[in-house]
Length: 86
Image (cartoon, rainbow, N blue to C red; front, side, top):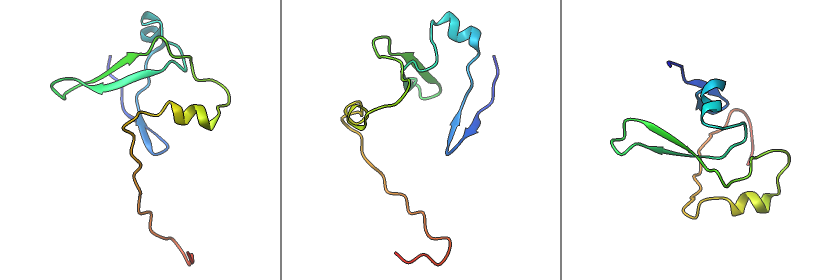
């Protein structure tokens, strides 16, 4: 199968065909782990089977608790576009 990277907001994504997802028993909202292959030449997606699908509204406390322990914020210098006074 050949597909293309597509822009979604500030990210890039790949659409996975329904037939492939069906063979892997994955559905919309399934949590997946994303990592590089040992050689660094491929992307590996592994479903997290015990995680509940993400649907509906979320509490900020639950989302924060699900963040990785080594998560670090990054400040982005956006600059200014007009006569903003900060």
